[in-house]
Amino acid sequence: MSKRRNHDAAFKARVALEALKGERTVSELPTAYGVHPTKDSA
Image (cartoon, rainbow, N blue to C red; front, side, top):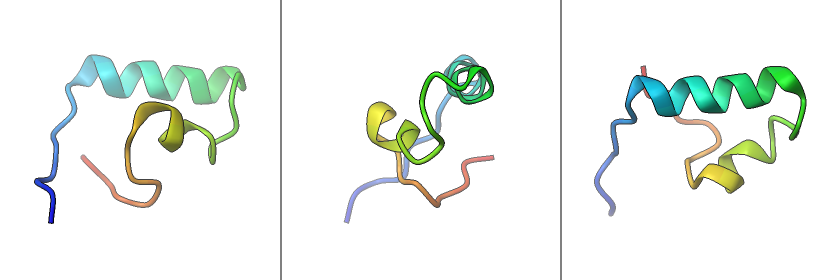
């Protein structure tokens, strides 16, 4: 089992902006950034 990672605010902002711009689909973003597609990391 792998350790859960905490992502900094800059990483979260970068992913969120990319989602809003529509450059990739929401389902493509987790694969592109190496994160789990359903885990929240608030």
